[in-house]
Length: 136
Image (cartoon, rainbow, N blue to C red):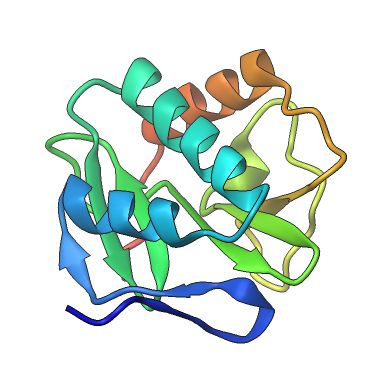
């Protein structure tokens, strides 16, 4: 099997797929320090949302609540950060800092030097999982 390639910005090119395996393949291919961020997000979802659904579409890991339609969280690699997308982020308390052109979407950009606030990330994940998922 061919080694996954990195796209512009260092985003792994992973085949579309449902379940944990494609997400773990994506994380394993994340370059350098970004892999730590991917592992942290994946572990937080697994801890906070037992049975969460996972998939990779458009070279982006997606997470959804078990038994619910749609996705509440995604992330992908950009040159200097990992962009975390909360599809209903405008409804989270506190609201994630990154604005979007889409009314309900909010972003969290995590850079190499940033410490991840595990308790805030966990709280956002819990809140987001209870909201209407984004159908993609």
